[in-house]
Amino acid sequence: MRQLLIGALLLTSAACATAPPHSTNPCAFVSASDVAPVVGGPVNQGQLASANAQWNGPYCWFSPRATFPVAIPGANANFQFADVAFLGEADYQRLIAPPTPFAGVQRVDGFGDEAFEVATVHYEVLFVRKGRYRVAFEVAAGRGSFFLPEERLARIVLPRLPA
Image (cartoon, rainbow, N blue to C red; front, side, top):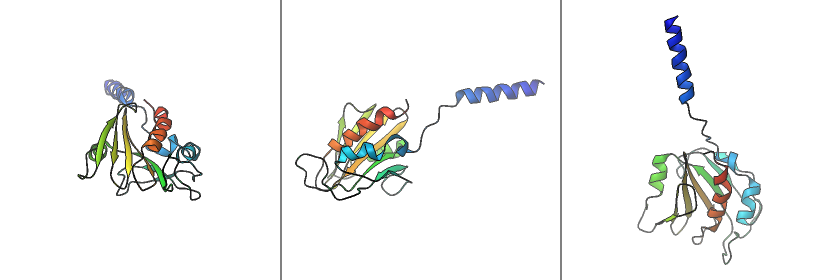
């Protein structure tokens, strides 16, 4: 009886110590109807993709339904894709460090617990830490660095993440 009581106590304490589930599906927090006004045209539903060479975690990828210029005043580039990626801590730290002398990393305020914009000649990404989440926001249009779409997308997604 004593062993049964100790086992029940251990199971109860282990269950109470378990944190709430942490979603690994970024598509659960963003939709095509969220992305379309950010990028300035129709996009396909987000596709959940697994880790690859760029993102070492799951990401939600949105492709254009047609060719259209990205919604940035003065931009002459066409929208290519948008993604929202969930990262592990090690990858988050690696990606906010300057990868080359040609990359710029700048801390920005107003997004989660901390945020960094990383820009090179060919891409720009907003990285945000909010609670247990490490999130990357990318809107690809080529030709220069524009953080406005990434910031707009982050303002939609971040409030939806659990604390």
